[in-house]
Image 1 (cartoon, rainbow, N blue to C red):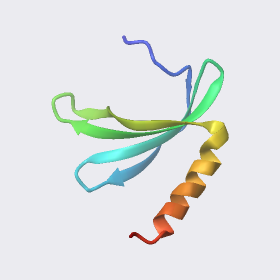
Image 2 (cartoon, rainbow, N blue to C red; image 1 turned 60 degrees about the horizontal axis):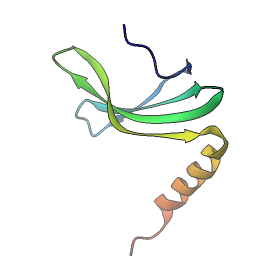
Image 3 (cartoon, rainbow, N blue to C red; image 1 turned 45 degrees about the vertical axis):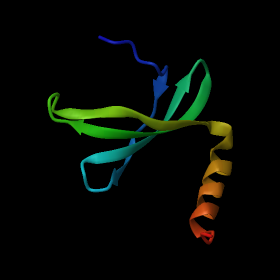
Image 4 (tube, rainbow, N blue to C red; image 1 turned 180 degrees about the vertical axis):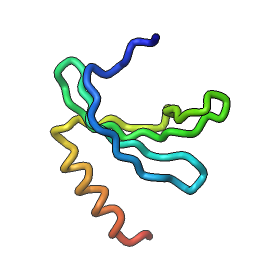
Length: 81
């Protein structure tokens, strides 16, 4: 069995993406005492018959999550030029 990368992993929240079986999984994680929020794309692997993570994702340090989410809210309301 492969060793897990994260020391601790929190509850997973899921957002379906594009209706093609892929999804975003958001969870709190911890490594070496540092806490993060991970947002990662997962896909359904037919061969293994399970969901697997992709390399597409971001890990945000917990102390800046509020700043990042505020900027994302701002970005969705800004007018495109």
